[in-house]
Image (cartoon, rainbow, N blue to C red; front, side, top):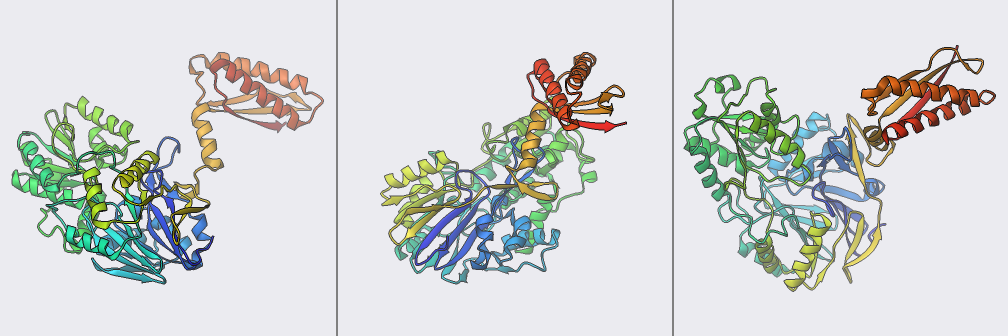
Length: 546
């Protein structure tokens, strides 16, 4: 589709899911993209760590794509850039801190000289064809979280990005209620908004409250203290640095991403009084009550610093009985198993664990119902378009908007093209969309042959049969190689029965082609494996003429 004299909203990621945010706006034959994020994998993609959006639709129209405008630097909003931007080959636009992190990503992939990255000052704007995108700072759990006011010939969009309200932010200066009310006074056609915390009946809370809660908890501990949080939450990182100072502890940062975030933040004028991280070897020589460790790994990532510390595989940092780990974060749905593995390892080592359930050590970066109510009161859009949530979140968000007297609501899904104006909202088309996965260094379809076969291998196992034949008869015993089939306690008996099944299949297919014999052997071995185990292993047969 090509937008004519109309304004189109089209998400390719982040609607019907939390993460992987990619949003297209189309107007007068041109497009802009807001955010280009990724998400982390789950068990449905064995061997995969990163999941990326499929941009087939807009790649086919790249000549009409004017640029990618980034709201903030969380991975679910910028993480796909180094993997997919070459195919789009369009400029990127971001505020200074976000641009700093993107630049490092581009440098790592050798793309920094090929892709244009434009740094837009905070409160600045980007003019792209029929679109004028004005940055509006909002509080969030990262520096320079922004909404966008997107002006078009057919009306203005208020695209919230990720946001919350915080009366006492520790970094940045978010727009005031008066400033947001003035935006509403301009006349907003549609609010395209964050749905993540729509089920929370309370406001998300202030970072200053977390500062007090963390300091109170840390003061009570006698051993080493680890605080784990998202590296990108610069406000929280700043808070933890202040807590270290206030409690008389030296600070040790563990995790490459933490050092990168702090470096980029300081290069852009933030964290100017942040305590310097001591060396790991020096940290372990300190009295245990004098050390505070800031670590990555809050979501149980196997290779993150906290996971390695918990399992005792970190080369220098270790914990002992009586030490404490504080989770200054929220458990993201889907990560429960990984987090439990780490916490159980810590518990076995006698380490105390404190989460947001036990103390006030975390606040969300997304708006609860009271904050959503305030934002709608300030912006007063004609249309509510919930995004950034699973289906249940977005439907609840739409119902909330209706209760708040927003005249019209529309709930998108990835691939849903919605005409916002004129005469909108109306779903006008469903376009190709989907997921890609990063498998090693290769990007492949998430539902392609590789992942389907890997799922089958993971679920059923594998049997390889080599048949040495001479003149259609076995010249030697068949060779079987069994992987992932649950017969280890009776392997000899299983192999013996497989050999018998193979011999019978060959006798029956004596006068037939080699291909027919191989298929009969494959089916016989697979059938036997199913009788033994209830599984249907992938079975391959190779004939060797001797």
